[in-house]
Amino acid sequence: MNAEETLTDQIRRMIEADIVSGALEPGSRLEETNLAQKYQVSRTPIREALLQLASLGFVEPRPRQGAAVARLTVAGMMQMFEVMADLESLSAELAARRMTDDERRQLVELHDTCRAVAKTGVPDSYYAANKRFHELIYTGSHNQFLEQTTRAIRNRVSPYRRLQLRVRGRLQRSLDEHDAVVQAILDGDGDRARRAMQGHVAIQGDVFMDFVASLPPAFLHTGSGV
Amino acid sequence: MNAEETLTDQIRRMIEADIVSGALEPGSRLEETNLAQKYQVSRTPIREALLQLASLGFVEPRPRQGAAVARLTVAGMMQMFEVMADLESLSAELAARRMTDDERRQLVELHDTCRAVAKTGVPDSYYAANKRFHELIYTGSHNQFLEQTTRAIRNRVSPYRRLQLRVRGRLQRSLDEHDAVVQAILDGDGDRARRAMQGHVAIQGDVFMDFVASLPPAFLHTGSGV
DNA sequence: AAATAAGATTTTGCATGCAAGATTAATATG
DNA sequence: CATATTAATCTTGCATGCAAAATCTTATTT
Image (tube, rainbow over all chains, first blue to last red):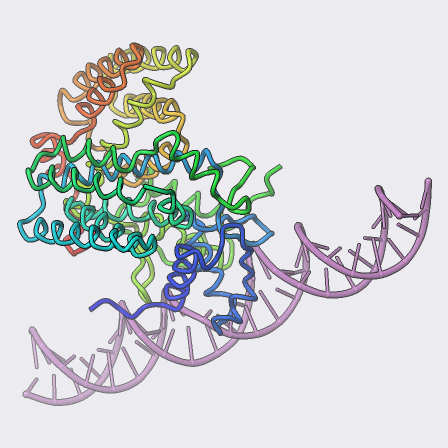
């Protein structure tokens, strides 16, 4: 039904994936000619893809100076975490009220998976399972716009966030917090679900400072702007 | 300091302004050649501007069929209001905690202006004053990312929202609700400010139904998607 | 007369070309 | 030798060109 995809779209998705996954580090220059050669297309679809990524905040375009993978200031990062915490909390509240029986079952299942993966102690695996857990809650809000918005922000901080779970002891803590969220959602208690999620994703002073301290300097942006 | 603006940027802003203001109605076709002629440039900067607007959600691009000013489904509109209500509430909460003395003074001043304008009973004037009131609260949150995000959503629903205040009696109600928000912020009571704002911007069943009923059919989108 | 099919026209998607601005290299100067 | 100035190279921003897809016209058939 939907018309086939345009070249620009494909390239946008590939570059975005490389940014989100961290393959392209924050601050990397993105030269149109390079990319055109890499993907075997002309500069036009590359330009168009970069323009879209710029308006989504993934790359910072400097007029007449090309684009680079966006870097965040510490302040900007805190701001994004603050907004995301609020949106995730809203998701949890709505999910508690709106999730179908089937979605609730899936939630329990995924939570068990998280627990199992946590036992292995491999941060990257937990990162993936944790991500699916949160995504299921976005979906459970039955608000697609909320889902898209939250996911977009999550993707933007993703290159940074990946490092977060390496902090010692964070993994077990995270699991306990998930537990509180799951219970509240199963009980259909929106307010409690919201507070539980807020507690889970809010940036706490010390944890955040440790996190910032662990970032490679090149990731950060000392100038103005977000 | 900042390099001069690119043609594409100027055009993007002009088209966006026309969409937000309602000069270009939802559903209008946006032909590249037309626009190129209108703005006296080649198709390239037009294409690039449209692509950016598409990723911001202002236009819906149908591959190989050009773009049109985005229309919202009723469901999509409800979803956006739901998210915006939450972000505005967060803004109010943070503003209560973070606004400077000067900002608080400005808030009181703007609130008085709203009251004065409301007396005249001209909806469009109140719309403008109300908008500035809300924008001051975004700024008062001292979270620029929140400010940008909220404003972006507000702009997207703006072509629809403009009609909302025409509902009879809405104007005085709005003013009373502002009053509660202002009081809570002045008291530095974040929780109360959040609840007051939530009450102000949340979509209530009947009001929303009246609102939807008043929309011109062409504005709405019956297909899938947001 | 309505519906369908075929052809003409328009419009997009992508490639290429070129000039202006930015970056780097080279040269001159204190 | 360091700094400043100028020249060369590279990169972007925009215009133009062309082929494929979509839309609109017209003609044909039932």
